[in-house]
Length: 243
Image (cartoon, rainbow, N blue to C red; front, side):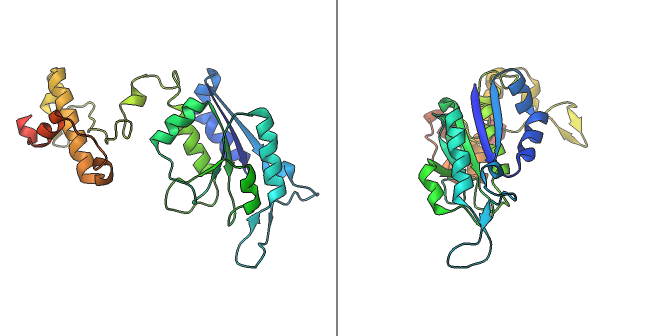
């Protein structure tokens, strides 16, 4: 089971998606628990203000330290061993290896940043920062959902096919091979004969060749990290019609 608590100013964004996606089915099976905490609940005053102008001036507002830390400390009482992760462009980029690590940990407290950022003093109660990539979002909610979704599908029983999580892109360092389904011919495009022949050894070789070629052509950064076997080197030297 994986438990995720998401600290956010917009809990409806989280609960709506979680209920209607594969995450909802996982939660119904007791394999996943997602709770949301509204950071505003920890902001003092009638208006529950969570942001303020930064010292030193500048455009934009910054998330205040008191409500954010209050929400984090409350979440830690419920998930005391969970790492506190701030969705932030300053963190390392989230990847499949990190998803596997979180799945093994079993829980996480995900803090959704907003505005221009958070008061730097809040980092004293945050264990790490995590980025989704080199682009800007209006808030960390979508990032938190991506993290939970990626981790949840690694939990045994969440996916209908147990092999799905270990045969997809990035699990082996490769992009996936091409996929085809019925009909066998569509608008002049046909399913490769090898996939229809029933020879599983040939199918495996065909899929491996395409996975290697696709990764080399489209993600040379991933390809450069691969430890190719002697069989892979020989396979890459072949043309498709030689397989």
